Length: 110
Image 1 (cartoon, rainbow, N blue to C red):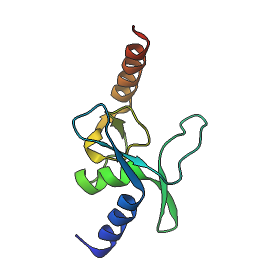
Image 2: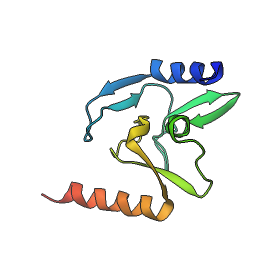
Image 3: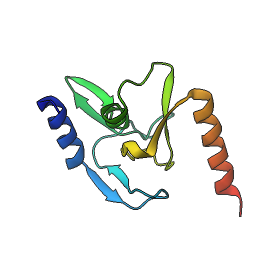
């Protein structure tokens, strides 16, 4: 692993709290800055090379490689602040929205 990648990975690891989640592996909850509480908010953010980037995308790219432009990451644990790459899956926008809506319905069911 290159020095830059090692430094980035170390910065990420220093800013997470490992907690049990709904999946077999624990959630890595981001303790740093996030994208706020507005529409589309609540995603972890960090500075890299002078730019603000989504931390869950950085960890997924580190493990999976390039994420195509038309694809999104679905948080399988349903926690936006989780940056565990094992808890994300590269999907289309349509699949991501369908899963989100299904999860919301399941929360409402008694």
